[in-house]
Amino acid sequence: MAAPLTWRVARLAERRVETPTAQTLVLEVPGWPGHLPGQHVDVRLTAPDGYQAARSYSLAGPAEGERISLTVQTVPDGEVSPYLTEVWASGDPVEVRGPVGGWFVWRTDETAPVLLVAGGSGVVPLMAMVRARRAAGSRAPFRLVYSVRTPDDVIYADELRRRARDDQGLDVAYVYTRAAPEGWRGEPHRIGLADVNTHGWPPDLEPLCYVCGPTGFVETVADLLVGLGHPTRRIRTERFGPTG
Image 1: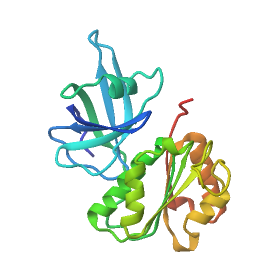
Image 2: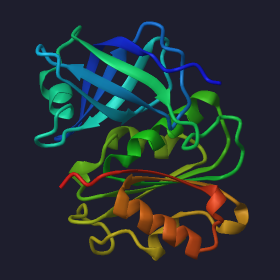
Image 3: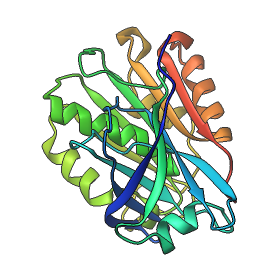
Image 4: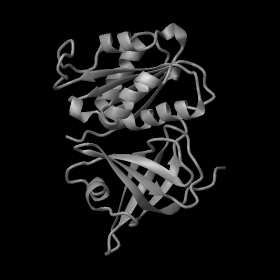
C-alpha cells in the first residue's frame, strides 16, 4: 500500500508571466520526493479565520532539486488562483500535497511516438512531458497540437517556438479558435478531424496519445482519435471544468 500523501509547506521562489492571464510559479518545497511528467499537486490556502480552500494544479516540468513549477491560469472570482497570481508574495507559505496521479504520465524510457493535444491551459502537463523528454535526451518522436483562442493566449509561446526549432523530433502545430496570427492560412475554428489527422500520428504507429483541456474539448478529441482508429488503451485524458 502506498504511503499517504502529506501536506508540505511551500514558498514562492520565482514568478514568470506567460500570458495576460497565466503565470508560472516556482515553489521551494523542502523534502519534495520528485515526480513524473503529467502528475499534479494539490495546493491549499488557509485564511486567518481557519477557512481552507484547495485546488489541483499540474506540474509544469521536472523538479529542480526541491523546486517545482506550476503554471496557473487566473479564474475570475476563483478562491485560489487569484491569490496565487495576484497576492502571493515571495517567501509567503502555502501548503502542497503530491505528487498525485499515475495514469496520465509519460515515462522517459518510453520509445513509442507521442501525440500531445492541448486545449488552453491543458498544455501545462504536456509541456512537462516535452521538457522531460529533452532533459532525458529521449529520442521518442513528439507531436504537439495546441488549440488556443488567440496568439496572445499561447502559454510558453517563446519556449515552444525555440523547442520546435531546436528539439529534434518535436513538431508543434496550432489551432486558433477566435483569431489567428497575420499570415495564417485558414480561418479560426474549433479543433476537428482534419487537424488531428494532419498533425497527429497514424494509428498503425501505435502512438501514446495524451489529451488535456476543458471537458468538452477532451471528449471531442478523444472521439476523433477513436474514430481515426487509435485504440482507447493508448489514449490518456485529463480534463478540467469550463472557466467561462
